[in-house]
Amino acid sequence: MKKSVAAVLTAGIMAAGVISSGLTVFAEDTEEKTYSVTYNLNDGNAEEMPNFQFISADMKGMTSYDSRVYVQIDLTLDGKDGYKLVSDCYCVENGKRAEVGDDTGIGFTMTTTAEGTYTDNGDDTITIDTPEHVHHDMFTDTYSIQMKEAAGMNVLGNTEDGSYDSDDLPEMTSMVPETVFTVNDKDEIVTYNYLHPEDYETEETEDGADAAASDSAAAGNELIAIPSDDEQTTFTLFDNGTYEFYFASYDVKDNGTYAYDADSQTLTITDANGKETKSEADGDNVKFHYEYSESDQLTGDFTVEAAALADALK
Image (cartoon, rainbow, N blue to C red; front, top):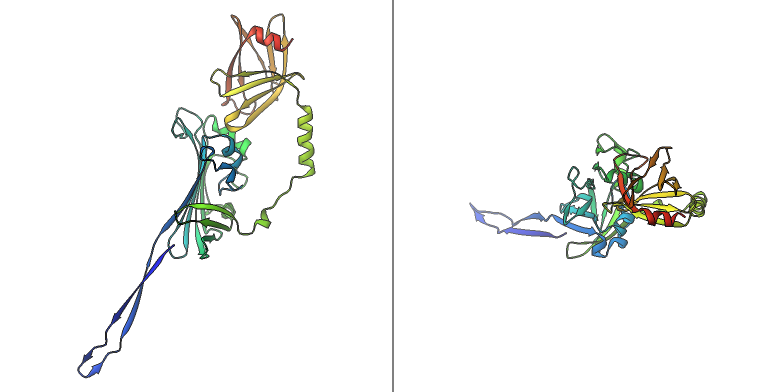
């Protein structure tokens, strides 16, 4: 942030025998400045992104493995003491931003706008205070809705799509904690961190570690992985009679059990709700349609060679 000060000196004048003393007037010009950063796997900086982005979920994990996901943060300073922070997470498909309602079904909106006061520390760092106002938009689409569970999307525990505002939910100001930004002379945000990081330190609980170990022990050995016809999802069969339906774009998994009848070459799938799906023969192939157990909006159509399936499950 730069400030310029203009000094205007009016010379003393003599009039009617009266001498007027010099008067100095200071006028201050302020300059608005915006610092920005965009995190993306293709830019090579996704791993450098802090574990909070001022939005309704921590998107570091997803941004680190899916090159279509971007997080852009803009910090605008008014040159006085006010800031405006905009954090925007979005998906790019085929070279353009995927929008909610378009034909991709993977568009989503996660955008936070916050206003408050800041301090320029004079050493290329800027500290923003807890905001006076926060607004967040969270909207998903046919496929991106599955990201909610995977990424833990929520606003103060609310998972419904919608616009949220601190005028209605004052606690939303916690989405933008006191933060120190490091910036450079290229108008870039180099990095940022909590002003009081000790308040946000967490450790993995023993229960969490035990649960992870249990899940690992319960997993069987992969017999065959079947890609969906549109290559968006994968259906994997394991040797312990379980399966995993996986939507890689948003790290969504669904598990259940299966049975295979070699005589009829029929695969029977039972999901977590007890719903059964049976495959059908189609010439030399076996086909089946799968619906995610938590939402029929996420589905997959699968085709596998009958001989390959029989060989994997013999």
